[in-house]
Length: 185
Image 1 (cartoon, rainbow, N blue to C red):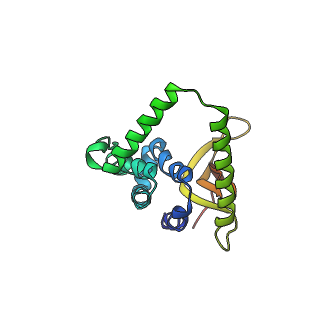
Image 2 (cartoon, rainbow, N blue to C red):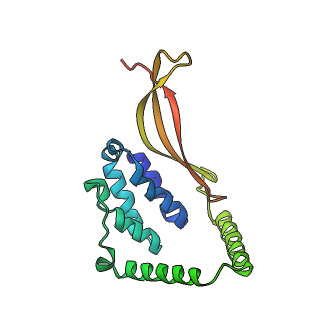
Image 3 (cartoon, rainbow, N blue to C red):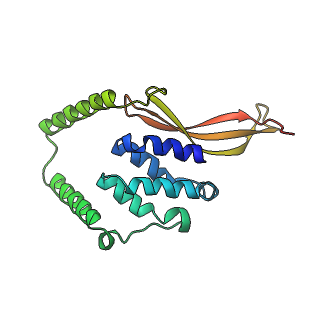
């Protein structure tokens, strides 16, 4: 687990807001046993998110701060943190504005242009020396019983749950790696 946390610590400050949220939000859908195994690491990831200036990452971190320990969400946000009050007010304002007038072609074009500029900036500034544009982080390890082709027997496999991100494109995904179990004597 320490290598996972070390990898996340190494790259977390370089991640875009979307990537930070992709690391934080799946915490809610992890099985309880996985949350128990990763509790300390998840707490550290949430703590890392509270150290950065993205208001959305801060808000999600505040919501999740009690989840690994108590399996409950912190929903008393506006009273505790003025930044969250501002962020929620901004969200409510944008929601109201979007309901009042439809999106225009100009607005979509501006967003597309901004997206392309951001992607170019990521390409120039991203990447970890000695690792290239791709980074893989092992999130958990467990075993699964998988049925064999005939359907009558099953085999136990070692399963690594991974997160992979391409710095050049900003794309990230979760996936599983299946490995055969080996007898250790």
